[in-house]
Length: 456
Ligand SMILES: Cc1ncc(COP(=O)(O)O)c(C=O)c1O
Image (cartoon, rainbow, N blue to C red; front, side, top):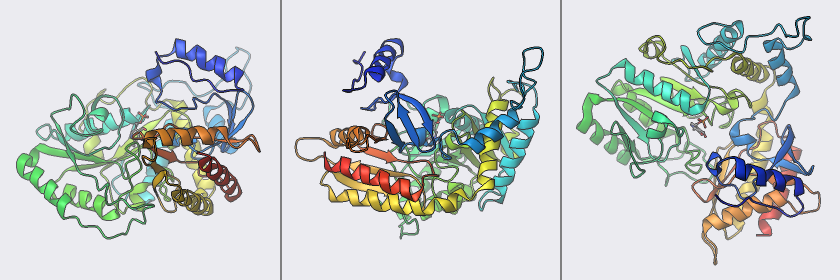
């Protein structure tokens, strides 16, 4: 058991860190050198138990796209749950049931309809016909893969892009990473993702030579033929270290799937609801998936995920084969409804453009530092990765962790800091503030970050 992380001047937080180091296994979290204790949150800010304010540059792992506890979202959410009125004489609210297992709730009907309508009107959403609810991203991925496999049980092989992250459970884990990870599933084959072609801050239309990727796909087709039934990819490698590909790569995968009747699954658990500058990354990249998997920002903080896609594919699963206790729970559906309504009520994506450009410029300027190797991200979107390099006596990983810590500590002047998670792939620090960050907040936070970086 590692010892609890402690920071000077954080007596309350240190006590909580100590308690949970004893009472929870450390495997529950990935390593982050700050181990922030977040007592409350509003908008783009967290406050520590000591009352220090932190700019949230993670959106709680890309969850709170609309910011933390947005009041209008909360009102919509509570209204859908029926929590607006006080308790009746029997001490119970007359509100949405907190279960949907083998039952249907009106909030589920409304959320399902609205989600499909939004997806279908988005360019590339023509195949979005049914919603398979789930409670986490990995579960939704698992259900998407189950459905794709059930379509034709003689075609169980799955192609997955190498170094993708789709979750840690079951089939989601089987399609994560690469063939060198332990205990690989024999049904899965990995294909190359153009990591070396990923420029610093992707413009997406850059020239791309498909030849080596096409050859790889052709070779697999030659070897396995119609046994290959499914292909899964992320639009950009998120957990793998922020690699944002040229459009032409994803379009090549789509063409390959179409030509060979292979189900094309796009994992948008991270990219959905605006991260790439459009509502869904399939619009940004000009592709039309058979199944798209949504999560994280979908519930803006409430745990919910879905696989949405072709009716003929989802119909291949029989009663109960996609069911579980929490799927389509009214709490989840009300959260999705609130998210959909909030995006419909405001042009969040247009509003974020200026902040996006300011943050991109600020992050790219970090490359002046000898320890920063690359800044990759989505132009016009709200997700970047700052990659560190070995320098002097310290490794890239040590510099990345030192950066996270320096941002957390801030510069003492305002007392503010910046909340970041521990590095991805050991050396890439992800920057993904809520989409609603204002240009002024973006400028102040980026200045704070630059000052922290200079102190490294
Ligand atoms: C692209 C992607 N897919 C799937 C997952 C798994 O989601 P969950 O952690 O909700 O199971 C993640 C989580 O980080 C993700 O980024």
